[in-house]
Length: 286
Image (cartoon, rainbow, N blue to C red; front, top):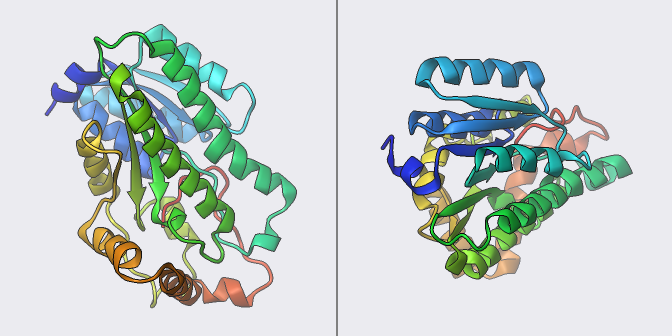
């Protein structure tokens, strides 16, 4: 296990959104496999602590990039580290998220969805592919974290779900377009994951909330599928839900079911005009 991914993708991996939750779980799984890490996150203190812990536990090297992924120079800064280390594996896990009514988002929030969840990963992938194109002797990997929230239009998650649908479609297209040039591209489409951001988003009454998958299980599913298929849905329950709602039921019924489920889970947010949002910049999956 330790050498397989390192032999395929080289010694370095970039993880965007690496300080906690799924991003930290990806960083830990890759460190266990012997890869050095370029760790990117908005939360500098937590990022520094995570990097020190992984270096101590697994004897790897890290580069820490405390970045706001909405900034216009974020791609340039990440690409500099990618080029310096000849990094050939990139995992974009970071996402901006809110669980709230669409009209409660101000214009700056809506821009941030586009900047963090769409513009930066697309521009990063574009620059990364240009850097490594023409070198078919080595495999290159790109993993985008998507979400089942991007499969149906769901209340309280409109811009988040729309941005995650974008990630899924982008990864699926690039999987087919770039495979002959040695790129493995995957969308990891997660359901609810027990990350700090997801747990913080839950209503005070949790009686209607199902438990999320362990981040480590999602990560292992994603890393195992990379290079084998265009997308993966971790978890048997999530796979079954996706199959039933996309292959068995008409889409109109599937959308109605998902909206009822989310409305039941977050009924407090539907009843109140304002609610404390999920902290800015943290990864969130549903």
